[in-house]
Amino acid sequence: MDRELDDLLPHLSAVAIDGPKGVGKPATAQRRADTVLSLDRTSNVALLESDFDFDSFRGKKLLLDEWQYYPKVWDMVRRAVDQGAPAGSFLLTGSASPYDMAGSHSGAGRVVSLRMRPMGLHERGQTTPTVFLSDLLAGEADISTHRSEYKLADYMEAIVASGFPGLAGLNPRALRAQLEGYLMRVIDRDIPELGAEVRHPLALRKWLAAYAAAESSTTAYSKLLDATTGGDGTQPSEKTTRTYREHLAKLWLLDPVPGWVPALNAFTRLQQSPQHHLADPALAAYLLGLDASGLLSDRGSHMAGPFLNH
Picture (cartoon, rainbow, N blue to C red):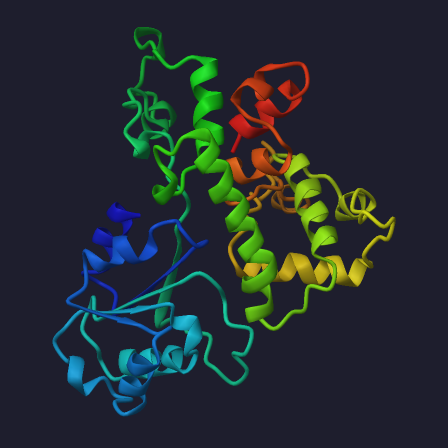
């Protein structure tokens, strides 16, 4: 993300960084901003209400954090871009797509959106890559001369350790508490803030666990629904789980990977279903009750491959 922002900001007036909570969007954007306005604060919203043309911020790089709390700012930025805002004028970060955007411009051609994900293994500083995919595709890498000191057990530890920056280095008990809290806030606060009522939290939790069990697969959503039964034996309707899915996607918690097949026919490629992925494999492992040793045991080894594919 750092490299992409550095490449784009000298040429684009407005860039929105999307991604789940805890992924580090504001920290990344702040390093490139002169002024930061957090729009979950009413005082900052009031400031913008009195300055629709950003006159107070001319010549500054402005970060609008948690912009979804004041969706009007999207159109304000879009108008500023239309009026010739210089490159790098606006950065927008948010952890959800606002549910009430009726009448707003999509931002197409004005605001470029980038998806930020949890840190990959090399970004955590635990290992240094020696072979790059770009070199392999260009035929410029000789993998026979490289050896990795990272073993299978190390990969399993990295999977369950999470790529969220704020969770780095936590002991197992503290990490589990943080992951549990993350999931609970999604269910009892984040989804309701998007305008949806979660009448059966346990059913949503079961659906998330079923989605986690389908990691790196193209399992049909109907099968995920079949696995979602509450403690009282009830099962949510297809409409309810579709609503769950839509709102989890708005929170950037679901991160399906487009299907791929080595075929030249474009229609064949387009017919491939996406693979299911949660934003962070540690969330999926936690939902399934698996730690690093569990992924290496008979009980959870069937999930080791899917998680490695994340």
